[in-house]
Amino acid sequence: MQLNIYYTAILTFILSGILNWGILHITKSFKFKKASDKNEQRLKDKNIPPLGGISTAIAFFIGVSFLGDANYNFALIGFFALMLSVVGAVDDFFNLKWKTKLFFQFLFVAVPIINLDIFLNIESLLNFDFNNLINYFGSILWIVLLINAINFIDNMDGLAVVVTGSICYQSIILTYVLNQNKLTDISVVLLFVLLGFFIFNFPPAKLYLGDSGSLFIGFCLGFLSILFTWNSGQQYTLSYTLSPLILFFTIPLLDFLIILEGRYKRGVSPTTGGTDHISHRLLATGFSEKKVLLIFKIYSIFNFFIILGYVFLNNVFSMIALMAYLVQFLFLFNYIKKLDILK
Image 1: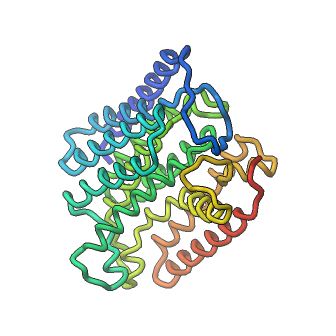
Image 2: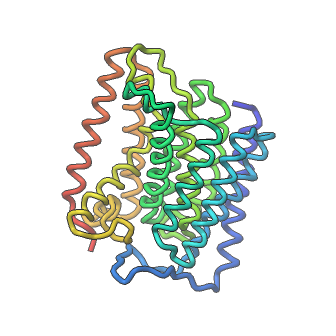
């Protein structure tokens, strides 16, 4: 990690805080209420600006510029991340159709994936060779899935920041230990940008990320998982091809799958807002918002230790750690989906 990353992190945190404070005061007298489907249910209906994503994107790009000249890869990815944030901002105010949003997501993800020739090596995992066609398609689908999963998790004050912030610090630790310093620096900047926003998003929230923020963060983290170079040094094909960074996204993916399964059974569109997320189900059991955030934080740490076992334990113990991860994931899925939906 470069020495100046510490100063960059502090400056980025301050910048994020100032930008969010400015947005909060500029929009104090504005009315914010996103148009929604008449069948939608939301946790809260507040006049809170959904503009935290704009300040997050601006602070992130300024922070990354402090690190020095970005290479072509990061510049191209950053450009399309910003473009997707603009789409999210438009959606925040005009409620775009889900097909339109999905089209832009696939477009903005596919261009850098194909242009930069970066992907998850799915063909190696499955022992196929289709000249990277499956790798391209699977990688695009993976990032689009993450974008929407992060967007789904932004359903309660402070929750998206706690979850994505946890992914950031886990990425910082792993990439630093494995000497992938560029990814470490980017993760540090994103983490401190989120911390600067968290001041205004902690319950009770004064600012929301909005789609502009959740789509932007999901895009950045998705490409972070693709750019990570994983070589376990072991003989098992699975441990070589299954990047541990993918496992960092357990909470967003768990929430996403529970939503899809539940709404499919109830005949409700997954694109419609609702109060059936994991956070809402925990609230329905009697936990406060702050306690729900604490539960997610504790689970993130627990999950991280399992992943570290997968990464750093040798041979058979690494596979045991991976099996433990899968078992606890399936257990939580079956347990949480049985919890009552918040009314």
